[in-house]
Length: 402
Image 1: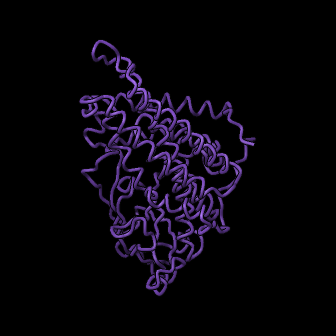
Image 2 (image 1 turned 90 degrees about the vertical axis):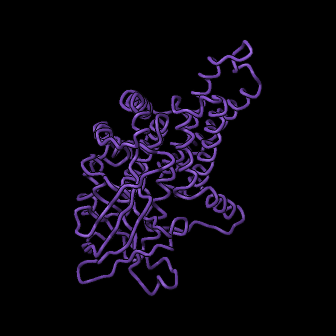
Image 3 (image 1 turned 135 degrees about the vertical axis):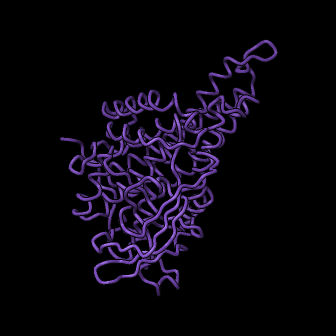
């Protein structure tokens, strides 16, 4: 049975993150966005609050909260700006939770603990110039040479690429399987920035999420120690898909927060703005748009909460999380568009936040599975064409703190 009442710990996390984002980021976000400036002091403050290891067990340096708390944090962060939630998606969802589930004890001690404490920043490097939705289309290779793998390749559209210390990277280790597009030839690696041959850069001119760092990674004959192989050789594709289950969850929760931000901004403006002698909130078509935002917010929140509930119990949730991500991101795009419409000409100016919401929402409809990919996934589940197979590793069932 799903209990819709939040625990005291979950409420405390929600309140803490809401206050942090409102105090530390909201007053400055217009300037940061306008300048396209990444502020390294913000993740440091997030680390001090325990957010960068929020649902990592305490034994690995984390705060030990559950996955619902992670979702609540992401919703509150994106309520202020998407770049905050993106940080959580890549550092916590895609990287830390993947290390927690697939890493060896030594890898957890060496990499997960400093990441959960916020001493090191981490990201996830799958996408390449010619491989987005087609993950098997990656061209990066890691050829074994004694006790190391020699890594070569190019990654792009990687959040935190130019600021992260550690990367979970995917490359072909079986070149014969690469020719056949057999994904069992892909492996995953933990790569450190300090490794010789690692070069990164920042992408400029983005439509949205301008206060966050997005960039590229170039690997030139990078010698990766054998002990940095994550999982077994050939399990890279499974690990990549597992990681996306966690990242998509944070995206769904965050997009839900963006819907709420659009709703709240629209309500405030509609009650203040007057035309023909009365507030525009009294007009039926304005009410209709605000009502849609409210319906979308409530429905999308239930979807990501269901996924979080399943994660807490150690249940596979690929189907449920895909649905939550798809519906929440599409609904956030609709909410942002309507918010700009309600604001009229003012919505076209960055004097008001809805302009930024409108730009920010578009990315989530594309990354971590486009809306088209998720539509196909949901149809295939219903038609019986897709059935989730058991995997060697699942997200650990959450255990309350003792």
